[in-house]
Image 1 (cartoon, rainbow, N blue to C red):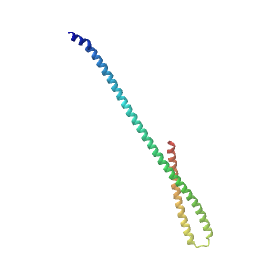
Image 2: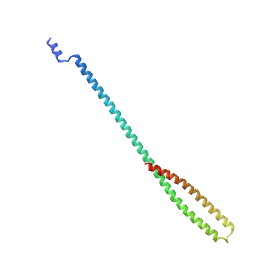
Image 3: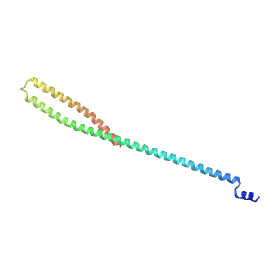
Image 4: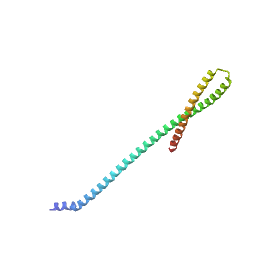
Length: 147
């Protein structure tokens, strides 16, 4: 019986082993839960970073489009300024021509008046487009100010 007594003395009773196993299972369960939580946190952090990156790219694209639109509107404003200058010179040349050509035939005067009125209509149409563009420009500037 010495070997049986020695074996019993070396191994702890079943109650001690059960308590030890339960403690180890609780520790393993706790570590497993912590690992799940850290995995979820890492996943959420990755999603947040991706979302922020997408939003930044969208903002950059919006700013790029708005800047391009502003350049177009500035070019249009310069063009309308040139047309306005041409209109001023056309009006003054028309009045000078009609005054100095008092002796010419009425058919020539009618042609001149007709061509000048067509030119004026074109200029007025472009000015209307310009005023519409200015309202678009102010809207774009307001959007740019948001960034």
